[in-house]
Image (cartoon, rainbow, N blue to C red):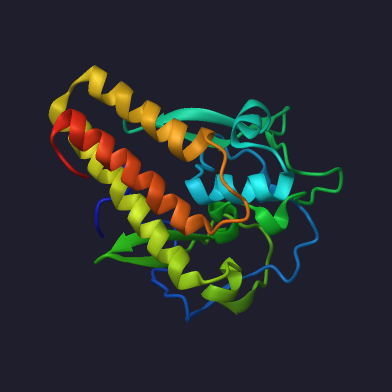
Length: 232
């Protein structure tokens, strides 16, 4: 297994069925239109970390700008030196703020990637995304088999996977450089760039997200290269 964001040492044999899946594989993850126990939307702490596409999709689904989302539904946390947003939870049950009174997701069509995965997880292996089934997470019994691609329910799944890979290794390279430099000013400037360009600056909803992501990533790389003489 290659290095992971957050770099946690986890033996997937302890939390999975021991298999790795690809997009066209069948996996026993289908809740058969879950009636809404919403267990997977409660008590998740800071684990639902968001990427730029999640912000784009949530803005599209709610009509709120990234800044408005951050002020109401999201919080920031530091992950291995990088500041990233996650879904906010509230109340004794630590419920996701997007749950309605019946325990259903109000932005299901625009839900974040980690929510789409559940109860699957993903790892990064040989420059590919692989999926695994988390066997201790979803309490619903007798789940049906479904193709991983269908379960994710993301248009242009291969393009989405390529984005996930690119974002993953981009952040890892930044983490490595932060550790190498041990420079607080460098870390602060990089985090401000990431927050501003990927999580605060509004996206153009009528334009392709992936094109906008590349443009913003290039801006970050160019700014870091000019000021610090290296390229991620």
